[in-house]
Length: 193
Image 1 (cartoon, helix red, strand yellow):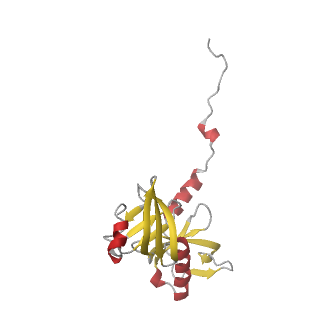
Image 2 (cartoon, helix red, strand yellow):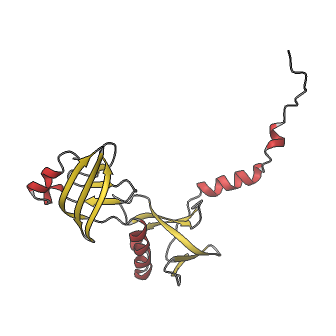
């Protein structure tokens, strides 16, 4: 038995209206690189401890600071973005050294908050149970306990003896020099490195 109802196929243009010119303009904006310099950008600290920016005739009450190369080149190509869920880039600082000292300090403060990564100084204990590793370490911020997955990319080599460890909550820890640890500490890491 065949269904006798008549269905009209909707026109795709009726379903989604879009402005081709607006889309083109937005694409051009995204592809345009805007350099922020000491001459064209004014950074200030807000009452809440955030960073504000005046650039190209526009005031941004709060901006986010993102490192393009956080592990290998944290002083160059720093992306300054709007502080909303889209995080649209406003501009790029080519080199932090080219900015005034007070701006450097403000930006580095924001970087430390965004890229908080304690440095592991001593490994007290690491034990594995049921697919998880339970760590007890001493960091530059004191004693710390965290959990990582046993497999995958929980421990990533950043160099010959430098490692980044990511726990199950996404927090990152840096082990700057594996050979700076004692032989007993390195032995505790045999399963991971």
